[in-house]
Image 1: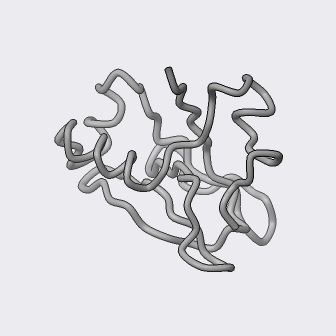
Image 2: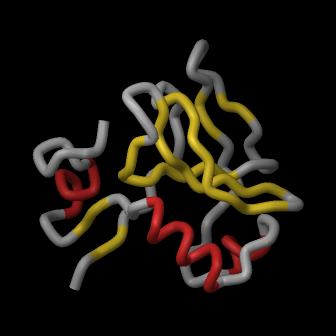
Length: 110
């Protein structure tokens, strides 16, 4: 489900001004930065890496150095959540099972 204020990991770790970006914010960053492959997210001010993900089955590290996966704070439905995904030839918003271990990037509200 969507992160409630009491469960929001960015808020819990960094304080009340911090949170996980929404899928709209990721889309806006992607569009504004001309992210068409993995170079765009890394060369941006955000310095997003192709860190891979943790498997939903074994917990093993998958696709490190090939794919970047970053959760948004929004869910697609009870089973799937929205995420930013990028690789060597594309960057897009997608949804996948919430049982994968993806990177969180916290943003600060001013």
